[in-house]
Length: 222
Image (cartoon, rainbow, N blue to C red; front, top):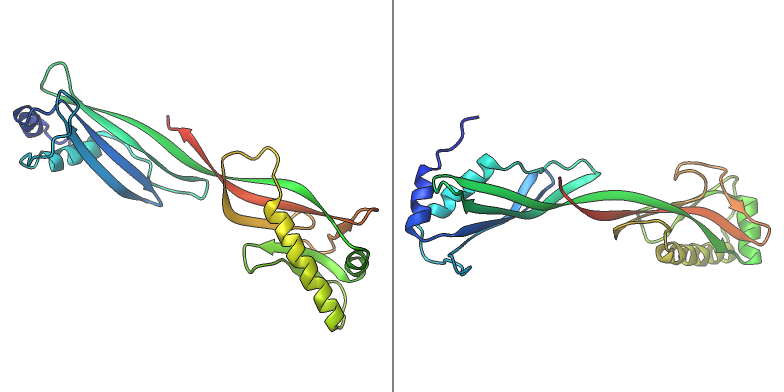
């Protein structure tokens, strides 16, 4: 790719007494998001006057000289940071130095043990094939392993149980998790949300299940 000639930008840089410039950026989701270009004089005071198109020239040169990582893949989310622009010692060339932080999305899981009442344990042992929540709705769902009539008493029992389980899962502290927790939440019996015949209840009536949540991790870009 042909590099943009810096001659005009350097000329205007000197004429307007620019000492340095900072290009703040945020990108991800396959696009460049908000950007801000700020010019400074030798006393580190922002230059706010009209600079005869220098700002646009510098922005074009930033994109021509700096590589940004905009593409997101579900794991890598994007990056944000600054490009520092200065005049080289030869006073004929601008230099561009990027410092940035990457956003990474990681999923962490842990095992939860939810204490059941005697009635809840008996009901789940007899009727439940699996229990799962996959980011939809306000509570989990029960897959049943045989036909049953949901009487008012059973409906109340399952409703209250699922509400308590959901609250417990939301509050569960996932060991070894890193970063900032996101709203994304899954929990389920067995190895994943699709596994049936996976309800496990301990001798002291604790439901064993897995909680998984996504976390955003920030790290310095290479």
